[in-house]
Amino acid sequence: MGMRCLGIDYGTRRIGLSYGDELGVATPLPALIDPDPAKRWTALGEVAKGRRVTEFVLGHPLNMDDTAGPKAKEAEAFAARLRAEFGLPVHLVDERLTSYEAEESIPKGKRRAVRASGLVDSRAATIILQDFLDQKVPPPPERED
Image (cartoon, rainbow, N blue to C red):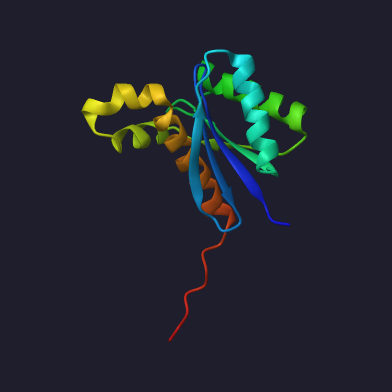
């Protein structure tokens, strides 16, 4: 019974998602982009149950000076709600640069359309989760031939 993590890039309009397990590879899932927050929450529950998630990994957007601004506080509130609702561990991962990294990987002309689709959010969630997995999952030992 290994770990199954759901990576989350939380936003007030869109929630980016990614999935990873003890193989240590994070892959993007479709973002939750329903305009109704209640429907996004329901959809999140369905993904978590469908993938039998064992823990959540949530991006924690601290300010560059390490203080928690409004966005970080929203993420913390969301983490508390996840814990209460699912009774699973929630790991907050510093994600100051991930949204930027995710955006940079998309051609400039396409960014607005791609942003609306939630692709950037899920890509950011994948970077967040990959950082977490890299710390938790030791790399395979190098074989000496």
